[in-house]
Amino acid sequence: MPTRGSFAAVWVVTVFIFVAGAQSTATSQVANPLDTPSPNLPGAPFSVARPGSVFHFQRGQESHKIVVGEADGYFANYVSDGTPQITSPLNERVRRDYLAPRDVAEFNKIWPLAIGKSVHYQRVDPRANSRVWNDEISVVGTEAVKVGEKMIDTFVLRWHSAGEYVAYGSRRTSLPWEGSSTTWFAPSLGWFVKVKYSDNYNEKWEDQLTAYELGPLEAGR
Image (cartoon, rainbow, N blue to C red; front, side, top):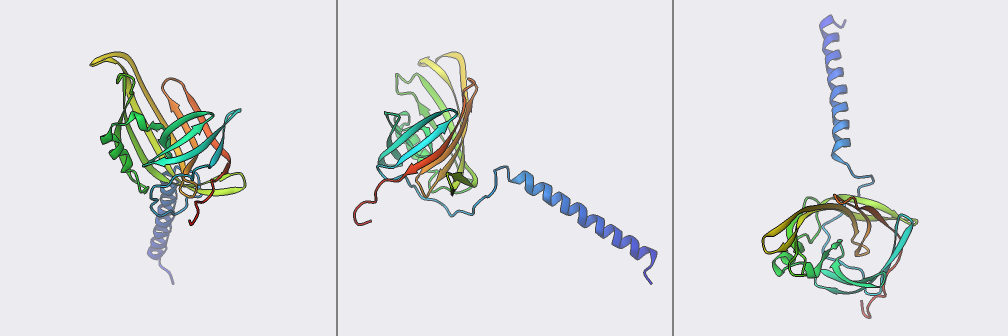
């Protein structure tokens, strides 16, 4: 016959298992702030959409189009609504002409993409070196994003930048700037499919890819 002590022991073990399970559930919920599902992706080497690829984005009530050209190292030539650009396919604010050679080398270390990877670099406005930003970009997770009827696997990257206006030399104003964004980059497309951006100048927006056409494969590939 079970004794009073054995009933107490069973009750203690049951309570312990219940509490531990509840704590485990709570921990898993906090540890995964990204929306599910989260695909298990291998490290992604540098990739950029083929020349001629077209990406259509929606931002609020406005739409815009990107037409991709040739790659330039780890950067991409493209035309955004008629304006030529050379930026990283990970983030349009990382412009090639704003990076000194040492900062190009630092930024390129983000490749191959892998969760937990982070790099720091500096951007400088080429117009008389009038403004400087200190940037960090990190790979924080993976997520499947719906584009049309498809689910596309992406790496999620967080970007943070802070700087201030510089008039000439060390003479500075009191107008510091700080901004951040989250970008969903799809290795299978070689481009981002979603961006959320905000800064302390009250600029805030979200771009969502709505349709795309990949450029033709090169002969023999």
